[in-house]
Image (cartoon, rainbow, N blue to C red):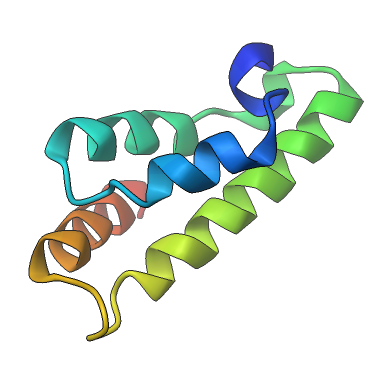
Length: 82
């Protein structure tokens, strides 16, 4: 997971722009389902902050300013995480 969370933050932010695609939504779902406790302390902090950023973007996708596909995929991911 170091290669995902250690990458530039823009990588995951760019990925979130394509959440309307179900295959990208599945990748995001798997990334958000990673348990930070399995990694060293520095990577734990990075994982937690990255997941928080991704969750903020998911919540933003629920607004009416995004397409229905964006909102449905964001909703599905959030429901999976509950």
